[in-house]
Length: 126
Image 1: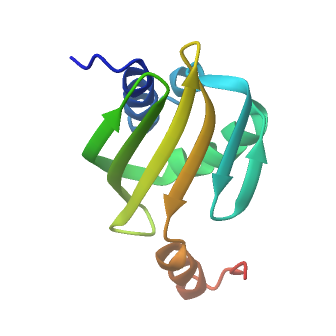
Image 2 (image 1 turned 135 degrees about the vertical axis):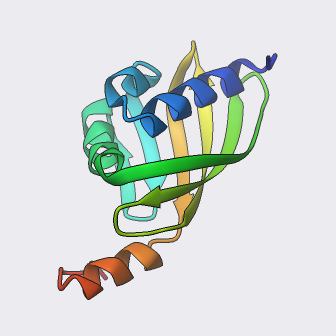
């Protein structure tokens, strides 16, 4: 059991969405969350749900690689397997206030997803 409040929240959030339970995952997200992701800034919980929902729908598996945290900040590193991409490592650095994630710096490589979309004949964002 971790003594880090931020890490407990980050892991509960991670466990929920990687188990396809976006509703429970969102209970760990602040209404005014700000997320900086490779596609740009996402503001507010509804926009964040819109960002995460499509990925949760295509997620096949997730493996936690490492997780660290203190009172206010946590970092989780994991690898995901999804319908279009067999391996997509990612990391999130989150800020937690009053038990909710208020900020997320989401880091992942979009290249494998862009290649999968291109192979399927779908438009790829620049």
